[in-house]
Image (cartoon, rainbow, N blue to C red; front, side, top):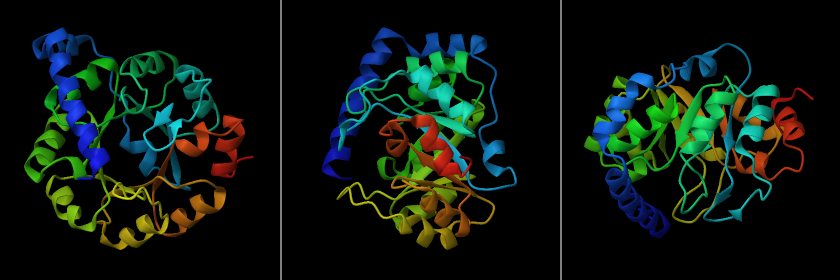
Length: 261
């Protein structure tokens, strides 16, 4: 892992331990009975037609700092829905991205789109948190997880009814991702070792992804032409956060990206 990723993972383990003290796993398990009904995260991404958009609700990042100062997660989610996003990604990491698990619950009550909890998922406890908060999907990052843990968390997420989006950057992580049984695979265009971003990375990886997997391109998508390049390469969906969140007019930015202006 990279230095920044090491720091995030170490911080996350402390955060999970503190959360267990505040609210034991048994309490979360009991709350599952009252969790919101699941929405199908995968089906909208597999629907016929042009490349689909997973629009991200994201206030900040370690590399950019605060991306959007006037941050209202529910208002942003409503704009995404109104302008044609297929699904939403919600950053819930607090120390590095200024997110919150509560955003999932707030957005869930306001917007009908399927929701992804985007965080550094390391433990079963976080899966319970996600489901109770209203998530329909969770991000699992291959660079953060050993193959056995990746497979276990993938299975546990599916057992809870959620769709795992399994993300990788390095090609050597593709084998563990496939062994985990991933049906929804994300390729991150950002090298977390250098923070260099290359849209061609997803396009180069396309041929290595099994055809029965739905492929999501992540990071470095800033224009309609970027979206079309991915679409022409056979990429099914794009996860876009920073470009949209940094735009003065989010609605116009979504329409431009989808070619619906």
